[in-house]
Length: 120
Length: 442
Image (cartoon, rainbow over all chains, first blue to last red):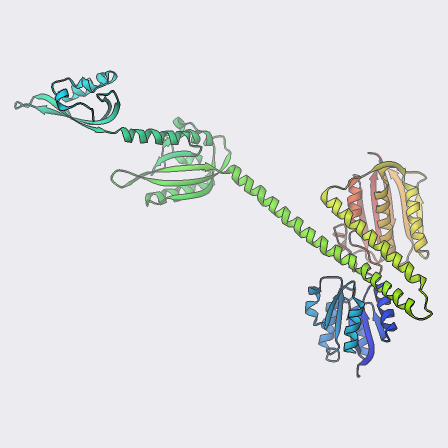
């Protein structure tokens, strides 16, 4: 399946962060798929068209960002999807995730939007 | 040497150069010469023309006449004043040294023992001279003496050898030893000189410094961990606030758009969460710095429990919280801190209680107030039970309405500051029961 160029996946366990980021991206005209952990996101990806970009947190219950990213990189269908990491940790925590960009919380939404628009 | 010209001396008695107090011993020498003996290296004192005393070494030989009878004596005098000065200087140094200085034969038999050795090891010189140095070597270190003596025999020095010796009263002393060979006139090693410095205090200081260094490293690691976690915990509510304000800004700019009042309410809740976080971080800092003081007052505990649970019931109307309280439990506690303890426990019960009913009871017994907070939620595994009261531990990974990972540690610190205890019983899937015991009076 070809990537949907207006679809963005948000993987974030903090309900409020997830809801507000989703709402903001929708206001910018994107379709948003929101998941609360890596396992949920992986489940969605195996059954649906890949999004244009995945925005993900690192520390999450059930399946954290590192495990999720490793699972993605093992699946040929998913390796090409760009990943943007948002984390409350220091950026080096995301060093091994082969991310397109790493943002530290609180995120600069304009910069994030710029990266998404450039990618999608 | 003596200041007299030959003409002044010849024909005079040798008493010219013998001080009056030495004349008697001089007669002994003369008696020996008289009987034909030679006197070698006889150390005595002479006086010069100007009255100075000289330390000299005398070799006196009889002069015989043709008949072989002793007719006179020849004296060869060597000025040994410099050597004598050096000797007395050395003696003074050895006597006054704060290091133990002793000498021994190659068999380890003590031949000299200075006052510091007496002080350090408790044996008087008279007790040690002629005895084996092994007396001050602990049984398990006897082999060291064999090693030291073998080095000395081959002419080597043992330098700053740190070891343990024992005193007469059995005390173990940390000492630093330097043992050097004593070489006789013919170049053969005839014994050893040994300088021992008591380094017991130094060793003690080193151990203390090591402990301080470890504590410091631990404190620094703890501080770094604290800063990292504090930053992490503060960034999440800040992130939500940033997104909320962005949303408020975005929606209010749409023509005819209005600000959703729930966004304002959510912002307020995030600010409250941030301010609670800052309070807790300060609590942790105060507790760690030891500046955590209790402000005790007399108050009634059940009223406080009702007040705290009332706050939670308003925020969580769907969750049943039942109370089983004695009519009155008076005690002397820090009201704000006890409020914090109950708030923490109830907040945990709600967070991990899976929306199931929560029971809170308060009673008294044996001079203690007993507060029990029981939930029927996810429970805690045996492994996690071990560490939930540690700083920054959370049994469950961060959830959407996540806690701070400091709450139970702070709870425990507050309860213990009141000389009470907090315990937990739990089983995964069955829920958790926290029991707080608070002594009623001071």
